[in-house]
Each structure stands twice: as structure tokens, then as C-alpha cells.
Length: 140
Image (cartoon, rainbow, N blue to C red; front, side):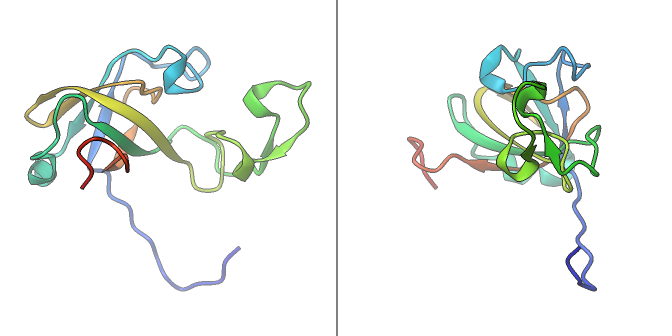
């Protein structure tokens, strides 16, 4: 464990609203058949949404609140025939700090709600931050 007296506080800026409710039946990656989902933001970050537009590609950081934090190695994609691999070399949600990274495309913007494609996060997952994909058409 890193020896530090610093405390890090993350405050969700919103939540995922999705038909996905069960990790066992959800796609492992967004491009593997994830349904459209909504990012519903807190009013306190409304100004941060001002320039989001349909078609934009975003990176959404989430807190995988149902993941285990004591897992350090996994069989990739849950396949026991594959060798055990350290979680830092995988996309496993189970890890010391279960931060999800999701590349999505904006389908609609409606006030504090942003509909996105390719998000495999479960319903209710806290959203930590949103960033534009570098190299996208409207790079900022």
C-alpha cells in the first residue's frame, strides 16, 4: 500500500440510467451490444454540459460500485482456460480502485440528461467525470 496521509475524495457528478441491471448478462465492452443509456447529471454541474453535442465522442469515467476491490488477478473475460493475469493488464471491473473507462458517442442531449451509445455500465453506476476523446472532430 502506498504510504500517504493524503485523502482523495471523489464526488459523482451523475448516474447512469440503463436497461442493464445485471453484470452477468451485461456485455463486457460497450461495443459488444450495449443498449443506449442515459447519463443523468447533477444540477451542480449543469454548466459543464454546455458544449456537448450529438455525435461527440466522449470518455466517461465511472465508479464501478458493485465491483470487488480485493481482486488483484483474474482469468481474462472470466475464461478459466486462460492464464491468470494481473488486473492492471485487463479491463476487469474488479480491482483496487474500480474506475470504469468507457468510450461512448452522444446520441441526444436533453438538459441534464445525455443519451449515449456503447455504454456497458449498469443502471445506477455513479459517473465521476466526462472528457472528450482526443483527436475527435471538435477537439478542445
